[in-house]
Amino acid sequence: MLSKPLRPAVALVCALFVVACATVQIDLPSVSESSGGERSPGKIIWHDLLTNDLDGSKEFYGSLFGWEFESIGRDSGFSNESAYTLIRHNGNLIGGMIDTVALNGRDDISQWVVVMSVLNVDTAAAQFEADGGEVIAAPTDLQRRGRLALVRDAEGALLALLQTRDGDPADSEPVINEFLWDELWTSSIDKATVFYGSVTGLQADEWDIDEDQSSNATYRLLKSGDTPRVGIMANPLEDLGPVWVSYLRVESPADIAGRADAFGGRVIIEAQARPLGGEVAFIAGPSGAGIALQTWPLDQKN
Image 1: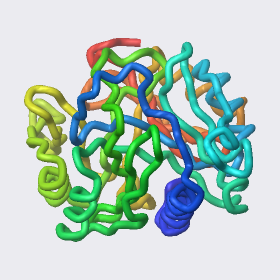
Image 2: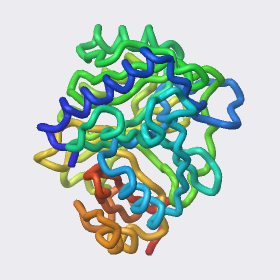
Image 3: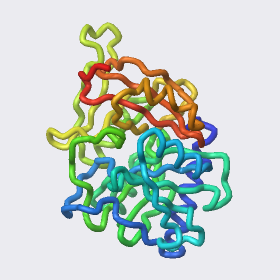
């Protein structure tokens, strides 16, 4: 589950996917079907699941969250129909799935990969390298989707940068059973804050986790004006390398976690009250990719 030994393999498969897109001129749909043409640097605008169990992942997320799936591999230029699948919820685009087995035969890795908006992906990728990060796959044109690069930050967390062709999804109230929030779990909050601030221009805002400050724990927000874009926190799991973690808004994390194993998943962190507010749990799907569950608003009680 997103552990240190698997991260190089995850990066390799992601890189192979991007290279394949460049080689055969893959045409992926836009991340939004109702974009206003604006871009929001630093905002997470898409989520792709690398999975070695496509059918199991569909059953898991479809059964627990009501997600719908649309295979577009051959329509997008891949040789295999299952290579890329769009994820919808109530008909709305919310993400994608990359079948690693169909792509290059890898059956040992899985991870959710966040896609961050940038104004100019070539400039942003160069900034990643200049600030101590690494470009895993150079900027590549994906036709309708825009221009994408795969990178690792200075602490080793993997993500993609996207300069959309037609603009980013507009800000909206998070919907139940859709993506709510994204956090970087890292070994150095301060270094990560400086790094992403340099690349995206986002401003830092510190949030005390506990009001009595007994633990001196903090939560770092990166904001565009008054709009929070991502969070940064100390990595809570010892065997997990620095990683971007995505949250789904759910009515009851305990209920979802309690049903995860029935569909091939497992619970990594049991449902519990979160110091920031609300209730949270952390689960993994059949292929091992972890995802967090969170109530919203934060003062919601279950």
